[in-house]
Image 1 (tube, rainbow, N blue to C red):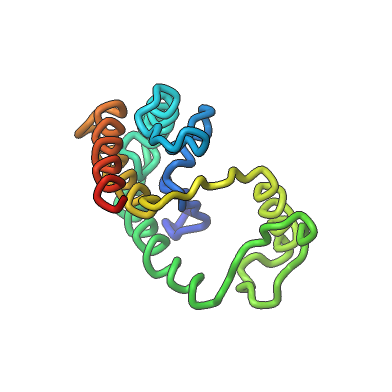
Image 2 (tube, rainbow, N blue to C red; image 1 turned 60 degrees about the vertical axis):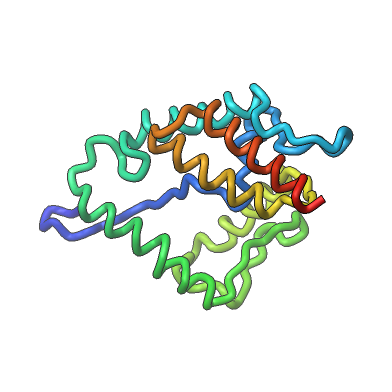
Length: 183
């Protein structure tokens, strides 16, 4: 905020990745072992990886959405809501996609909104470089169900309604049952 109380700059970080197993990868874990064909959702590496992200969120943000000590929490919540809903819709309608292969590092796409300004090439380079570090998603018949189930139990764990272990034990059980149902 500037001296008059007007918003000068803002930042937004989402705690929810597109592939919910991404938080397992930070600790060397997986949700599914392709070699054995078995679920590994509640593996100790995954529990520790999820707990690391939960600890970070609470220690830095204090309530998992707004930075601890924020002088303007109501405005911050309004901004987060806008970014997650209306801002994301604008981004999607613009057809904006990031550069996901190294040969596109630094390439500025014409359909990108002008909000990137002179930083567009730099951002395009970062996206391409981070994509080169991407982890392959181990797909299996109940993958979509697992992803939704992980989002549900992560929410419980982030809001301290379940421990990381209890949340992942529950997801392991539910996804295993879904696999048995779908064959």
